[in-house]
Image (cartoon, rainbow, N blue to C red; front, side, top):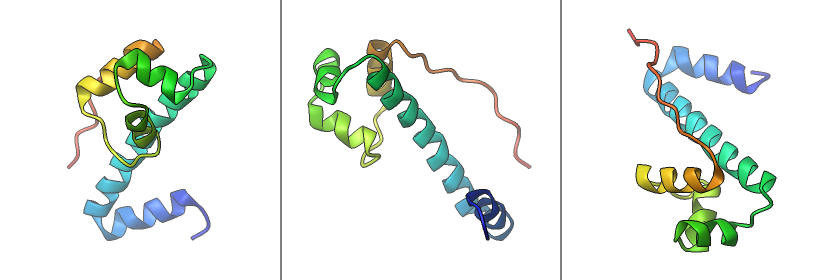
Length: 95
């Protein structure tokens, strides 16, 4: 396997459960990446964002390093302070 996509395609054919886990991990990573990118674009430190959100700086650090998954209210709180929105849309049905 030469690329990440090659590996994911292989996993999709071999183990659907692991494939689902990979997809969820990638989706969470995309959310966290958007959060970090926006925080940096606004010139905010983790401490600044944490203060704005009423969170400990360590919580922001753990979220950004994917060591913890925030609950929905925490994520929405962070997004609000970063000027981001979370969009929900229907997914393709899985068969």
